[in-house]
Amino acid sequence: MKAGIDAAPDDSKYTAESFEKALGAGSVDISMLNSTLGVLDMSARKLAVKCVSDTAAMSRETAAQAATMESYDWSQWEKKGLDAELIAEVKSIMEAGVAKEISMIPELIKENQLDELQKEVVDAFKGPGGFLELASAEEKAAKAGMLKALADMEKLEVDAVGIRDVTIAEILEREPELRAEIEEEIKNNNWGY
Image (cartoon, rainbow, N blue to C red; front, side, top):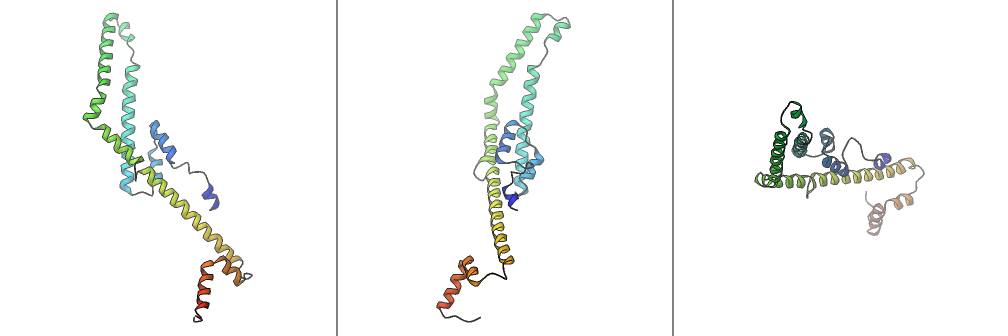
């Protein structure tokens, strides 16, 4: 149990730091997230997984669109015999269209309330009562519980192993509450069973 308390975090579960890093990189492992959030209510886990999945899908889609535009091979049209000036004109029209679409992103975000959705997602993870705070509180409570159980077991071991050789004075030294209770009963002349 001591080794478990002092052990490094379980690699099969996210820490707050590793989750934030994976979320930023768009590489959150859903099964690992489910395992990490296993102590939470099922609806909270489903919400967290949905938020992460939706964010990852949007990021992939955006990256794929950008990659397609950047890697497009305009020279293939020259090889097919089209006029180079015409190809350059079409390319500039396409690039202007993409630039216009990019410039419209803030307006689309506002129209579709994506900034509010992003705030909801951030709040769900980082806000008061968010997943990261709940996970941190669960982790702290579990560690405190383990430390208490360990202390209780160590005390029990001392009591069980040395029961034949222990004196009443030693018991009362280890148990100040018991000492106070006995002294109070003696003071009140309480000798009943």
